[in-house]
Image 1 (tube, each protein chain N blue to C red):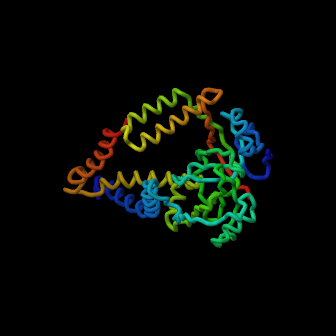
Image 2: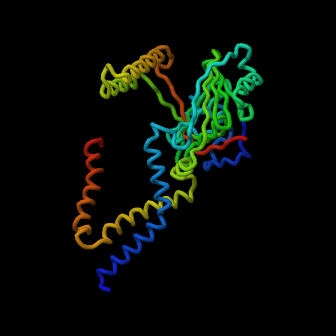
Image 3: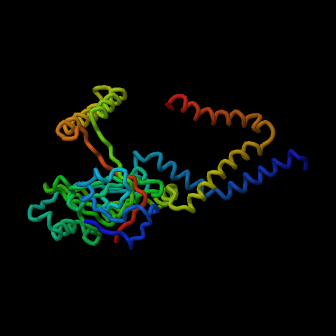
Length: 186
Length: 157
């Protein structure tokens, strides 16, 4: 085994094994990255149902807790009651375990229910570095990606290597972000 | 309402921080005195921003007082499940002063980014006109908007 062959062999081993180890993290950060890219279009952590209905609440007094509870019991939500607060516009906001009501004096009721999205809530939680240990692990992951990227471009020999076809793709991949910077970066 | 912290487990690193918890309604009346200071505030979580959970609004139960809290480096995010809960937050109070110069600058930005017929242009210009009116009515000649850079928080059960 020659000297040149040796370093390529090590690069291949490192690329392969680090890649295996970081597979899970790559999926987590990719999924949450896509989810968080589209925050303007959806809430990636919670699925929501919003409704607006009108009730005759003329016989109820919104300043009394028992009346507020009676109103939300129309929806079978009394068991999920947390607390309620007044709003500046005379409305009352009722917080539920997984939702809320906004009851207006006119009888209009806005009703929101939500539930955690099973996968996205978890991956987004991790994406936001929930603790010190995760912070270190995610730094390690980021460093691992750099290692995978660098070793990856040197493991192939021949016409598809970094001196052939690989060079074209690598340059293209670098040019795209540079173009964005030139066009949009102040 | 003032409460002294001691058993909630919040751990302010700076021993000079006053551990008295100020309710959001008390804060609102004296906000000028707290600018730049690191204090504890309590209130009911009215809303958690869906854009990453980096912002939360706490309110008083009568709906008259509110305070926007931004998640600092030590708060990864606020989860929606804390809506309706009472929280104690340690954070540094900030003030945004909106005066005539601020509004003129904002107007220039709106004119630079939107055409007069755009809905965003009309919406922003209406907001600017409303703020200008409020400034004229104010004694100080500017409007103050207070917020807090949150350092840590705890849900009070």
